[in-house]
Amino acid sequence: MIIIQQPKIIQLNGKSRLVADIDIDGECKTLWFETDEEYEKYLCYERSDAFLVGALPFAMRNNHDIKCIAPVTEELLYNLEQHLIPTLCQTDSSVYRTSIITEYTSELLGNHGGVGTAMSGGVDSFYTTITHLKDLNTHTHPVLTHFFISNVGNFHNKSRKKYGVQRSKKETYELAEKIAEDIGLPLIETDSNFKDIFLGGKQIVYAIAFAVMAMRKLWKVYLLPASYDYGKFSLNQHTQKGSEYYALLLLNCFSTQELRFYCDGGPLDRIERTAAIVDFPTVKKYLYVCWVKGKNCGHCGKCRRTIMALDILEKLDDYKELFPIEYYKRHLKDYFAWLERRIPEDDKFALDIYKHMRKNGKYPEIVKKLEVLIEKMSPLYELQQERIKLKTTESKLNELRIKLKLTIKRMDSQKVKINSLYNSRSWRITKPLRILK
Ligand SMILES: [Zn+2]
Image (cartoon, rainbow, N blue to C red; front, side, top):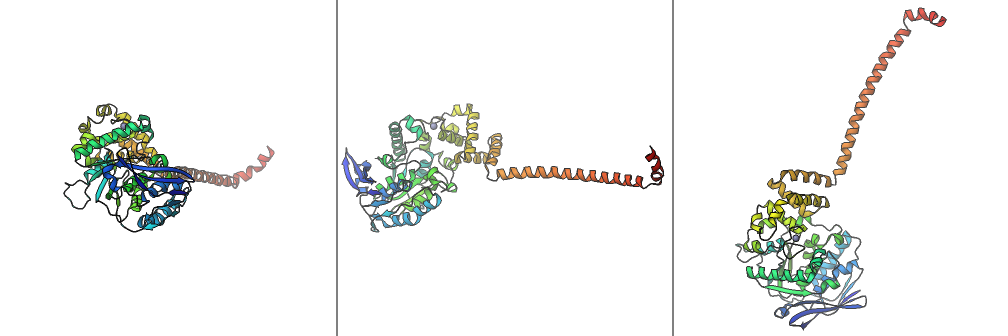
């Protein structure tokens, strides 16, 4: 059983913290979320919502029910109990059907109409930013009011750990500050120990939702830049593949009347999103995608696929300052070899690169090679191979059948000849001579 105690706000070192004690089978830990004092008024201590959403994947993986001391928003509870939890259980039998024991309420808390998104300097966050700025000549979209940066596990992948989690975090925050200043929007910097308590890998969408919901009284809309386009939605082996694949479902279930989440950028794949942002001046100054270093290294998977996207879009020269473009041009073969390695591993981004290379006719020889690889990946490929084998065997059998028929025919004609010899008059007359001999 996980018990989420009543959340409360405390002040610490000039910062404001939303904290709640989390009791996991009798062991108590304090989960905190921190931001600048000026944003304290937006921290939501009246509901368990943020903590419940954060704890849910951990509970489902480790056979826990969840008890919340503070009430949960009725709509959220309905979404989780009626839609999300049963779906996750139905599509992956390794998870536990967590029960939520809580009071609930439909009383509105109000919000300050904030529209936020993350700013990491990458393609996806830039795409969401650029398509939600004030000066866009359309009234159909929510207008971005704040950038939001959180530390809920984003800096804890293998490469970042090697580079240094704190160093990586510091550099990302500094970059976000520069971008926010360049664009002219406030940046809300936050921190949390979420990853020490709940992050079990591949659950980043829940973690981000925890951070956003912790400041629920600010937001009306939160735009989460989609990692994958909607066509790649999948619940298949969801505990292994990661929450980004079914963010569309998660964000729909986390949305309520007062806070609407969007999985933004989903109609486009990564190359199309790159195409939409490459000419924007701030992107040309600050695009940063690297998994490994403070600067785009040009060698990690994210750098490779971004450089190749820029190449497809004929924008390499615009990004000479940010990526090792000359190195890329001299080592094209290595980059293509990487693409060939990634495609059989079903790397969705590598497949997008292939798709766009094919479309714009660049590097036709590579496209041909990749086509063969992709054909082999088809689930029908083995069946087709069996069918080809079967057809070859069948035509060999037919040849043999024809040969056999001819032989039988020849034998039959020999038989007729022999029979006619036996029946001939000369054979009968010479019979006594043959006996004498
Ligand atoms: Zn890199």
